[in-house]
Length: 186
Image: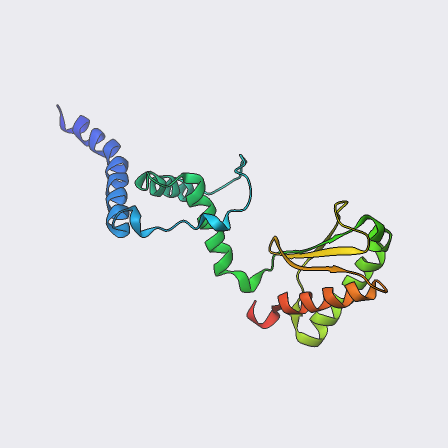
């Protein structure tokens, strides 16, 4: 084999050598996959197939990382990575609060939306905090004058309105205050 062919082969093999070195570094860094704990209790939804755009080099590194941890499913590693990223940056965002209302309260949704805007503005002005988004959904399974507040997908309050919709507005304001993000931390 001549020197030029040998040099070409070595150049072609260089990226492969780098991948092998990176894989070995990952194995050494992880000390085996036993150091990674997957908290499946935090996975509350069904597994879905989706597509997204990502930086090619980052995705290739993630795929290589996953190939080193064969006993844990890639979907679990990806879900855990996303959750940990969101946890690490929780001071900069807040998951929406969901307000589920019974069918008879649906006519009051517009008033609630207006009140939510007022509450949000008050929180931001008085406390220099960013109030979390609120989603209002109707729930035909709820009894009359009933509501459910969910924070981060989990039920935080259940209630029934006794006299007026303002009871619900007060409860909502307390939850929004509690979940508001300090703007000085952003």
